[in-house]
Image (cartoon, rainbow, N blue to C red; front, top):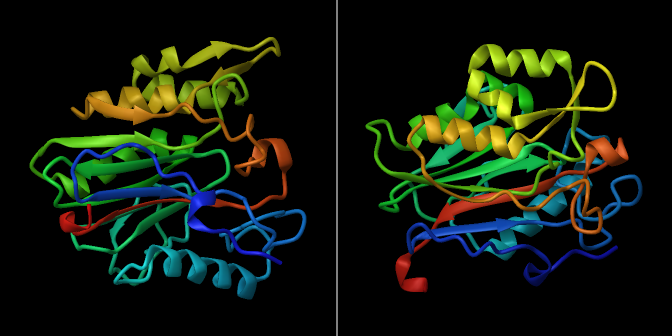
Length: 252
């Protein structure tokens, strides 16, 4: 049983402000056995809670943060909380405090990392199709920029539009919310099904919120099972983390 080191994670080259830090864990390591098979950080996918808690403490140790990471109990909704809130049943978390990692867990859903351009606040949002359609990204942006301050976004690994098949109910839900979302869908060979790009839909939503500096979105979980978990491809599987925090600029 081995735990990963930081060089086995992704460290995106996205820096909207010198104080902003981001990281994405991978499944590298052999901490959890099959079916989680790697470095699972999810408590809701059948893995032993003690083993998952040990993995989470390992993340915090490697980050050397001042506060424990703000882990959420995600429910595919749109609630976004502050990192110090006790009720963690939410799909987004934000902070304006230094060295307090905000984290979301995914295995096909889209992690959206948000940062105010002045480096005073950051947020992590879990955008599955339900949360995205319900407005979770808007809640995340509003949390860190209540007066429409400039915000940048980074889109993490998620299932791509070629791999993600959805039914008519998903298409209708988005089309009824905003007709612009129709461009995130293309008709599938299977009747009454569509191929859906959650990244494209997120970019439409971010643009409607005035967030024009958007990076990332190229990595597909289902196409890269060596590094990421994919619920659609694997069924019972683990979760990896996307994290964002504020650091001291002098650490550059």
